[in-house]
Image 1: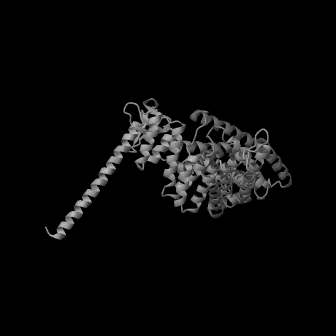
Image 2 (image 1 turned 90 degrees about the horizontal axis):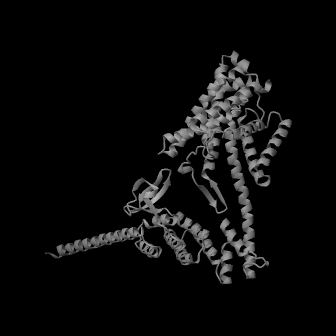
Image 3 (image 1 turned 120 degrees about the vertical axis):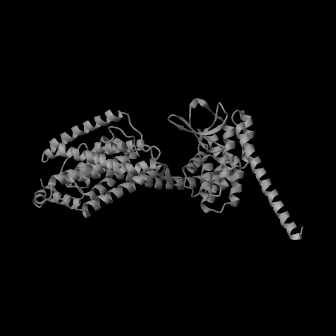
Length: 546
């Protein structure tokens, strides 16, 4: 054999031995992981501590999720086979998945599985390993969340893990969170110098948990003595805490403003359809709340028809709710309302009777019990701006959704032939009729449009509250207040009125209570209408001229 062939043969042999050793190690690692997992089923608490250490040493990528399930109490084993499964609670039992293959096993009965229990010592051990895994993750957001989690449960045992992670951390935001978590741990140190360094390390932190820790540090006993014996530490803690309280007040105002705008968006969706029917037709529709209710129930039905596509079902529910509520609106207008034009009191009584009939209809079909509409994953949770301010995604989406509906309605009224006809009937019904406009058709379509938009409001409200036969009644009075305050029939006025009343209501509630806040807003609107009977933005129309 020549020298070159011999060298090539040796290279192939070395490569084969290396790959074989990798395969053997991988197989051994997998075997060890599976064996340790299987022993978790019936091991005692003392044995579980050793098993947790052995499982962590395998460095298997499935370990973090396994420890999370064990910590959250979601790790079970099947009694007959001893198979370890992670479960998720559903109505019919437990949705199980194998922790080794990660394959779904379907729904299993509650009596066929048993939980793998842990005590407080094991929980601390699991949190330590989870923190180690997450703080060494390649993803910055995972490391950031891990540092925030340590702040919520600062324990001295996490200090070496944090020190190691800080040495290698390059991301500024993550490093800042780690420093704050480390400072929170050092607040319990016996060394006053370390506590002082810890307090100074908490300057600029925007987290309510930091405020709680500093308040505990300065807590006085019955004799008026502070829990912190060192004067320098107390002074520094008081300065940092005062600064944090100022920040907290600012963020509280921002949070109240957000909730006020979100409430205003809900009122806008609920009132905008009423502004159309009331503005064009002069009809006091007491069944408007039931159009909202029909839209919410339509959302519920669509989700029942699309159980495996909850996110898509909400999108489908928007046009479906518009069509269902709009169709009911056209039927009501053609069968009842058109005979009562010019008689507002009789219209009010008739629509009130219709609202009771619609409530009874849904009670007969869906029972009087409230129904829960599932929130899609993309609307769940919240956007945590910082530890003092978080904005829920469902309310954020509703704000943008309400603005989109308002924009589309304005475009419909200004840029379509139907919108032109509607405005003509609003300004002068007799002249519009003499010009060949079918005023009866415009009335029916307008009432249907207003009812359809109310149905869309029901889709949004289904993400904030339970769906029930009486849900529309909670918004009918507020809707009328918004329309009258903003200017009857004026969409811009409806927008300003809804946002104004929503923001004022949310700022007034913490000070005087929810009920008294609504009463004062109602009194304000009544007094305002005495000075400006046509509202903020007056719109000339048939009902005004009459």
